[in-house]
Amino acid sequence: MPLPKKASESHTIMTEMVLPNDTNTLNNLMGGRLLHWMDICAAITAQKHAHRTVVTASVDNVSFAEPIKLGNIVTFEAQVTRAFTSSMEVHIKVSAQNLSAGEAAVHTNSAFYTFVAVDQSGRPIEVAPVIAETEEEQSFFQSALRRRQLRLVLAGRMKPADATELKALFGNSGE
Image 1: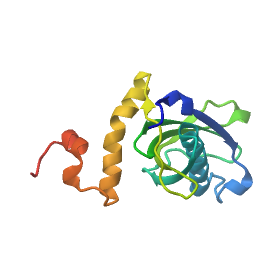
Image 2: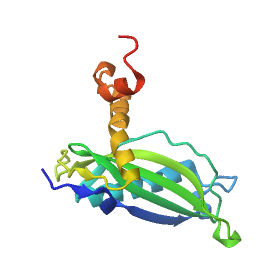
Image 3: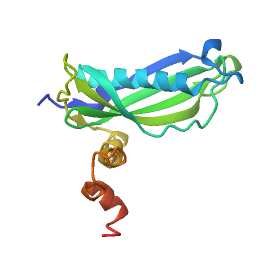
Image 4: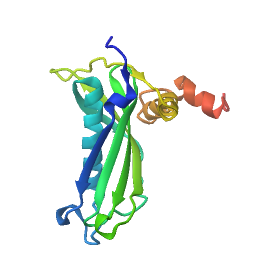
């Protein structure tokens, strides 16, 4: 098993500028472009932790809370929250800022991505456990197992009855 690594070692910040090719007819950043950039930042974050090639396994719900406009500076901040055997959960926060107008950055999106580390043959490979140091890191770490179980249940890869963390959260009603 690889040696544990601090969550902060995977911390990644990526910045992009919204250009005309990135926008729709309303001059808002296209959702697909935003998801593409989020995936790149989250993948870099997972690779920092795993020191291996990683592949995207899932993306949790992404809501577009605020439009991101042409010319805005978009900042992505991501960090691994927890590692399982070969998979890692990455939390990513997105903010946008109109620098030319001197406006403050506005939070626009957050999401959890799951990546799997793979070897040269594309087979899953073990990754280092995560050491959560700060209160925020510990909170993300502790809730990651529930999010993982929910993903697995929704994907049909885990029976709801086996999702012990979810059952503890919602109670054992219906049994």
